[in-house]
Image: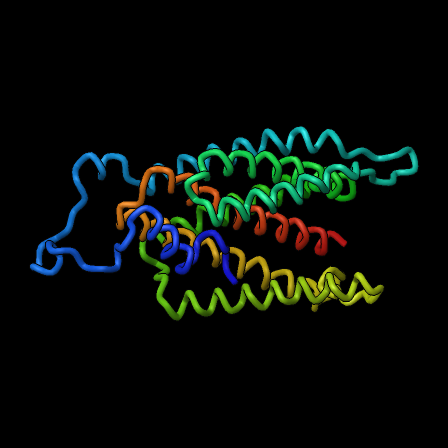
Length: 267
């Protein structure tokens, strides 16, 4: 599945939450008129600019959490990387906050920043581990992630990429396949079977990593389309935080995959 926070099904679910019975045409629509929300409602509605402003706020929070997590990872005199075990609690906390936020968008103004903190601490610790092995790799990964974000946003805004139903189905199908691969590899590893061949610095491993990065990048187009549709439909102001949260989920995935791809190339 694509980003679970910003999909058509979630859009329908959260819209029903702020606009019960929206699917039933009202009198104005039945008479051929445009059913516009009241002026005060439009003033308090979600906007794309507001969503991206909040995305920037979440990005700063991730950086702050990352700075803390970065300091927790150290290298022993024998050059062994040491990541505190409690860092993995932030992974579970971040996942839990994400699940609650997905099913309770009204709480996104509070949950999205908390999610950003949890993910930031985890990303900071993991990034330091990569940096200790390959000097400069984190800067390259961050720069590449930001570059992909702005490049995809520009392509979407200027209409170079159209998010059609076919486009959505292809991206969702590819993302679902990747998630199944992740889960299958993790399940086998629990039984001592090392099937995670895509972590090996071979042409096949590097090729798979490139494909995953491309699919993660394409998910950003689905996120932008969700935000546009929600803004057009007059979603409430708190949905700006929900949209920003959804973008951060995709960016976190993209950053980790770019980091892994760069490590394969360095090897």
